[in-house]
Image (cartoon, rainbow, N blue to C red):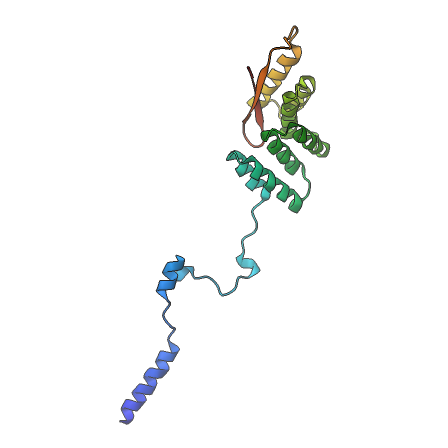
Length: 196
């Protein structure tokens, strides 16, 4: 009887020391395995750093979600300040949304911060061209071409079109052209002109 009592006490002590089995049903419902259990409380080091709002905006622009991209760019500017990158990105989004005059104003602000910023010159040229201001558009395309060292095919094409439009003599004022933008690379657009 004494041995049985000692064995029973020892079994009770061992049972109390072993960890309780995990509720595999709850883990399965949550989609977690034993190696993916959530910590009891998250600390600051457990939370990944926020993704850059400009990167999110660029991805949304590439996906054609211009309004959402604009919101992401404004959020990035609120968090990081009014940089030439943020202003140029906001101008590009406005351009894609057809808000040409807003785009022009914001792109001019971007160039006040950095006169050599190629995407802002190119996109300001596009905004001006869409308003029929070909001479000034040509100036900005020339600046973009010079600061880019002529490497971008899209900028060369935009400059060629602007030179052609400003040099045309006997241009029929009644002839209408449809202008459209084609995204090329990071924040750069190609201006396409087709007769209506």
